[in-house]
Image (cartoon, rainbow, N blue to C red):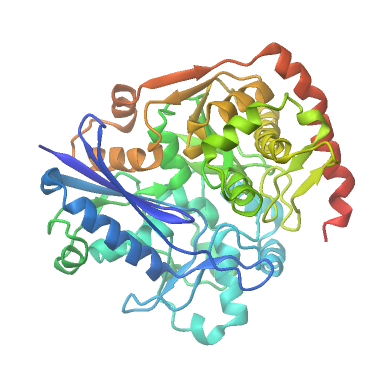
Length: 488
């Protein structure tokens, strides 16, 4: 039987999965790793930890009887990585990940050199400290001794692809983290790179996400248990692979992300940038994603569990949240747990509980956390509509989609119907679909997704709850506006 293997290099763990050609999950394994925060604004991981975890997870997948029939491998990965490797492929330093905001000064430098208007016209995104390009310049400015040894800069997924195949690659969907990426045409702008003093050789050639870029080497086979010679595609951004795996392949369809981070991705068939949001190329050829990303997704609820109610399961937290009425009796949560991304773009934003009193309980805090994340989703969706995007139903993905309570809150807050696909493994499924297209098992990403992905349940907005959320959302927006000046 032909099977497909997929990896997701996430923020807290790597996930490996085995699928058959009908998209059925045959096996799934995960392996955790830590996130290091050595200084304020610094959030980093060592890429070799990703590889170590991937090897362990893949070895367990490879022990499945049907893994011997693997015909392709796809890799999804967290965004905005900066993996610095030397000529021998050795990692030179820790990788600042998507939550890292140390490179604020480098953003100003990029704006001064290229000009904000020119830069935005080129790449469709303003410069932000969490993006990859400022991190490259930060290393050059602060550690020129290390930078002098850098041969290539890779993304999280392309680093794992390199470990599997020995091929240096860069997929289209991850290009948006580099402001020298021509978003309209999907290629590097070498003039911009030279003006910034960056050699074009630092960045690998750009490949379509579903293109085979190499095969599993003998060394990688020994490390992972994968068969030698299995084709590996370029892969893509985790949010974009998850968007594909949720069945978002047509204009107007929208993915709602409920992983460690929160947010949404609206599928577009045209270039449409807005400086308050994030524009990337979809892993599906010819399409773009207008994205909103919040640092406070499932990670905010996980933090609450670990610090306030460690003895509770997520299901028990759901039950407590359901016992509190919509609007949380005046308790409001700003989910800005590591600064905030779109649409406010404030690396100094902080999390806030407002409205605590003796009458409030852990149940109130749990529900307020869920509502705060839903409010950030609504804020991003409203911004996308203002940018001209047509938004249809939302398709939920990530672990938070397993919570009926939280998903219903999001439906009520946004006023949108939310469809939950039949699998909560959307990101690895999307990566597997890319692999299937690359090896010719599927005709196209869209046709495969529409055949494979089924909806298991739907949530419809409740009119009475939506009314209650009107005042709560207004308070959420006003709170940040009033507190912004103190977040320094």
